[in-house]
Length: 209
Ligand code: GRF
Image (cartoon, rainbow, N blue to C red):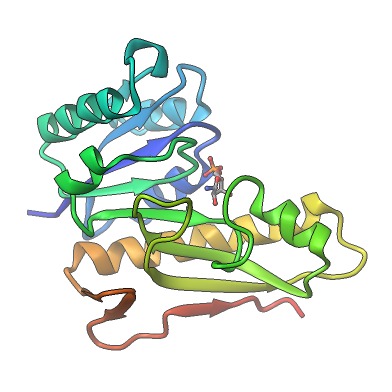
């Protein structure tokens, strides 16, 4: 049986869409949002995937929120958790329930530009290359061990939105690639260093430029 994945979202869910479109050796068992209005919920429903909404206001602390999250994930017998634009920091309650089994995608080449709006941070800084990173989640903000990265050029006449769009396109290639490895049990974690069994390239380079 294919590993069961929960995708956690807060917004548009374009990465969710990419993960749904590429699902072959994994099954998206549930999509969970912290916002009723997240468009990703509509995408999931249209694909016949169960959805759940867990609102911050219904849980007094971050830990209580994560306890509800763990209960939901266990109810769907989830093996992997993929954060895809999920705008909450997770606590040890969730991390301890799924050790080295929670992935996140960040729209910058970590460790540069963690936190909110990584694309705009990179644009405003004036970098000439940026990209996306898929990493294991730890208790910090985008600090977990890196699994794979994708690089794209940042041109001088780019707006922040131009760069963000170029990065997002690569995110949609990168995240399914990594989730397939995870589902095939090909990730090996030694401290901060993650390797992939079979040693495939763990980076993508943009064709543009
Ligand atoms: C992506 O840029 C992702 O890297 C970041 O949040 C954004 C989510 O976009 N964590 P979407 O909801 O997948 O369209």
